[in-house]
Length: 236
Image 1 (cartoon, rainbow, N blue to C red):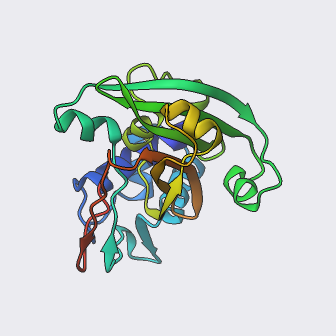
Image 2 (cartoon, rainbow, N blue to C red; image 1 turned 45 degrees about the horizontal axis):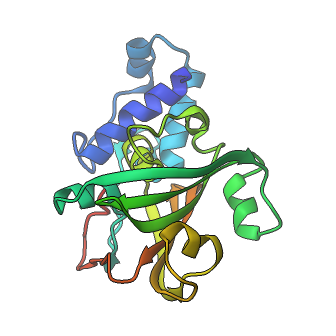
């Protein structure tokens, strides 16, 4: 990890964990230069990344402050499937099926996610108590998350890994009822047309796209919960 990425990661974690509250002032550029033993250019690069992610405000002659959170009328959390199943008392397992680094295809969403770089495609199956629960098809931007290319998913499945290493600032979720088809039905061990719940989700860190994922759940094996009200947290 480069030094500017380390500075960004340090302050991103402090802000998103609540250690630095909205409106709180960050150290001056000179203080950050001394703390990390780096140049002003390195500090500026880190602060620019935090600004782009919507985590800080830089005010001329006043300093740098933690940004006020946006108010949302509805929030649907990005769930950690492994954690949810363990909380339900079920044995969890992730079975990798396909993993490759590739260029974006003709799809516009793929090109926007790749951002002139490569994509990591990670496909697999989530199992509960040894039975298939969800077929997952995920693309991750190697530009936004370069360290994921060599990440080890033996401990954490891709979704859990991303939640722990790459805090997101915005998510878009689309939910639909579908009939299992093709490789989805094969991996889930069901007949073609079997009722399933499909979740298509995209996440951003500021203006930077992080991941796009399609999850196809056995219809009666999963539910989703939304929280309504101003100021709701975006969760993990």
